[in-house]
Amino acid sequence: MSDIYTVGMVKRLVDIDGDALDRAQRILGAGTMKDTVNRALQEVIDLDRRRRFIDRVVTSDGVDLDDDEVMNDAWR
Image (cartoon, rainbow, N blue to C red; front, side, top):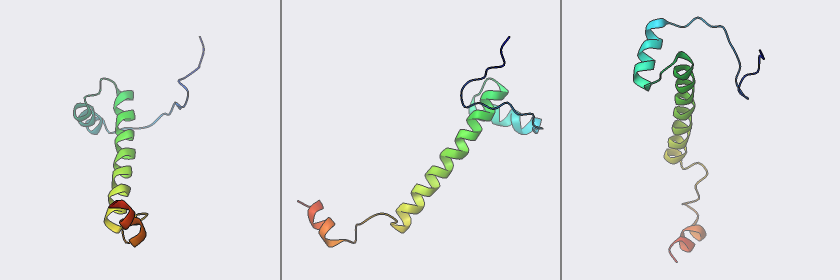
């Protein structure tokens, strides 16, 4: 039998709070511990992406709406 895992997967031995795992599994609708952990990790990554996007919108970082030339072209 081979010890080959899905590309990008790493096998880890960790202690996990059983109650928190059960709650996360129900919230995420996951069927297995592995699926629960992977979905929870993806949720954290997605949350960070949304927070950074909101921060950019609030601060107008990378947005050139105060550039008159850009805004004039936008209304054509």
